[in-house]
Length: 202
Length: 202
Image (cartoon, rainbow over all chains, first blue to last red; front, side, top):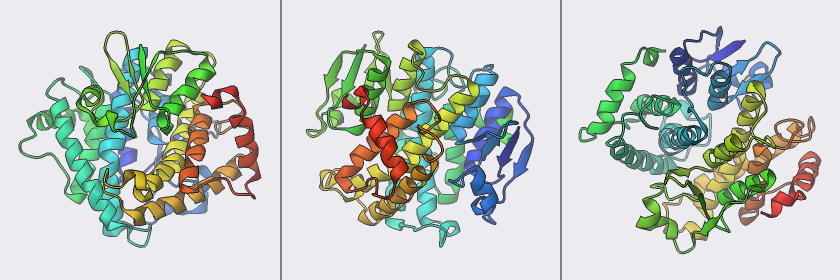
């Protein structure tokens, strides 16, 4: 199999961290999104949405979507579990992974897409919507700080894919100046723990 | 267990259709989102995001997020499989479920949120962004029509959660006049098949 990776983009890093936690090594091909290689016909034939990363299996099957790629590796190598351990836990982890993605990382990403020079001319930017997203992401980090007063990791006592999604969302937030505030002690404690894992360097 | 349901909203219908396909019956509690019952403290204590539906287990655990709720039922009752049958197929179904949700249903929903009178005063609306989403949703339906030239259902030869997500996205699209165009024959054929299943009435 081959992982189509892109060093600077947040979604490929989610898969790299996931693989590092699993101890899985996969051959990679770098896609230069700065040069819009992911918008060229050869890449769009593999993923019409143009997103990175994608995983190409040996039979030619292409798996797009970060969480679907992670699901594949979770299925073929369940240990250590990063997406839950039984029906109830898998549902809880999925809930938290989705919340971290849709409620935190996505507003951060939409702030970037709608306000940053990188996307100027690439997509129809709506800066006013970017600022709505900035406000939403800021509120959501306050909420997550409160949640983390109650447990060590996002989805419970164990590190999961939900932590990976939030870590990378927060790290990416630097480019639009959205991040952990000084009074958010629980979030700061969590960030210190999670970002000091060896996988965070992936 | 109890399902907090809301008759008019699209996400609860995704769970109802999923349960109908599984042949599972769950006691429900109606949440009136027109009266903002989902923004009252009692509900927010169960789901701080305020979204419907949620599933409350007998031990008090609350599962929010539509797909997480579906995952729970898929785990406790795998047949008929609606989220894939093995590692590769589960990844493919997850990819398509996410594409239908993030690339089709979400732009339709964002068109509604940012342009419709229902959300006026409830959220900061940005009509210009709503129109960006309308254009995106319209393009994505064209793309899905092309994909459906190649297979019967969204994720392959079998009905899955990805079909449920698209069905409900398209049905909801009526409120913002986004829908299947006369030339989209594959999509029309798919819609006829999927909407005539008994579960579609759920």
